[in-house]
Image (cartoon, rainbow, N blue to C red; front, side, top):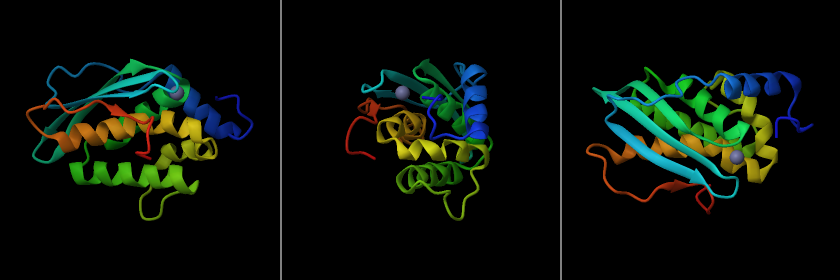
Length: 160
Ligand code: ZN
């Protein structure tokens, strides 16, 4: 994917960097939110664990495996949402989905480096890879505590 001519050089660098050295890719022992996500179309799997205190994402981590886009996107996601209020994290999920739908930077929210994934919007199959971490985070945060046995998240459906 990262060799796609549709992604420009700078964006490729950011994505590769997060793929090679993902941020917060580890189990979070003290988590109180979690969700499992998968994208069967590509074989991507991501588990998001988060620690929410007083309405704020005080820590977040992910584990799993998959293509460079899925892993880089999850890494960028954790980097963005850590330390933010849950509301803002969910707002970022919406902004990210908007970005994947429109192929344009979202208005009103500055996603920073995450906009490196803009080029992915041109490839519908890859949008499912890029969205996986975000959809999984969303479910983890919305599910609340204690973790219920909700169905795992999958991006391989009309959910986009
Ligand atoms: Zn993938």
